[in-house]
Amino acid sequence: MALPNFIIIGAARSGTTSLYEYLRQHPQVYMSPLKETNYFLFGGEEPSFGGPDGRVVNRDSVYRREDYENLFAGRTNQIAVGEASPKYLPTPGTARRIRELLPDARLIAILRNPVQQSLSQYSFRRRDGWEPCATLAEAIEDEPRRLREGWAGGLYLQRGLYARHLREYLEHFPPDRVRVYLYDELAADPDGLLRDLFRFLGVDDSFVPEMSSRFNVSGEIRNPVLRFLWTRTHALQAALRPLLPKPVRLKVSSFFTSRPKRKLVFDEEDRVRLRDYFRDDIRELQAMIGKDLSSWLD
Image (cartoon, rainbow, N blue to C red; front, side):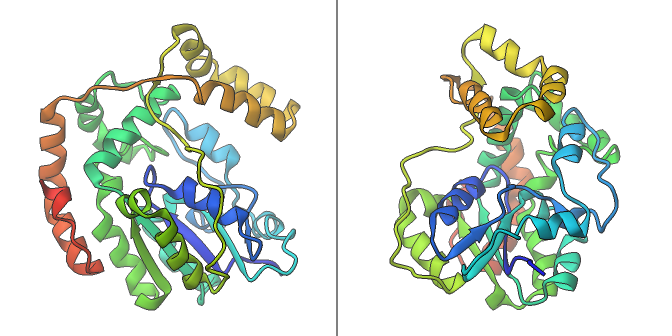
């Protein structure tokens, strides 16, 4: 039976894709070939996310035990076996389900200033055509409805309450099994962070991965024709997906998502509103993980 012994649990838009890609390069690490399996979200039930991208997330997620195990069947002699699903962190009940199947798993969280994370998440969803609201303020006002309808994404307030989410994991796993990093640490000292991460996983910490590539850059595609083709043809993309080999799909996706971006401009009111909303949670998180987060409160 092949199962992971570590999981990157989140947070979204905070460097999880970078960690996944760097770990994939390590000869002693085996990563699921599918990023964001989302397996522990469902408890064996078929996915039923709502929202504009709900159908895509439902289709691309794994919920059957056999399918999940098959993702790790390619492991040979690697020491560390893992996956990365950022929706694990903010989803209630996920920590319990992970503990029930993988009681000795090591968990990794990488967290970004929740204000910046919300802005990045909004820009990312606008890039891919999944955010219907023309402003972040409108999207935030719409969030209660989105929560009721079980949206897969577009939850700009709920997803940034890191202390609330981590509390559940620390109730199910001992602190020495949960490692929390900051997005700022990855940006400032990626070598140091990865050495610590490799030691946490029990693999050779002298290995240095190639880190020149940037992953999941947000912002709207600048070219209006390409932007239209990428954001308004989801039905066609879904129809073609089963017909195209994965390498072809990745090249097509990269062609669009690597195009020059138009950075979205946010009102200062948006930032102040988000900072006020997250303030108490940030202070609780600071005490919880023992790291200075004062810059998040400025």
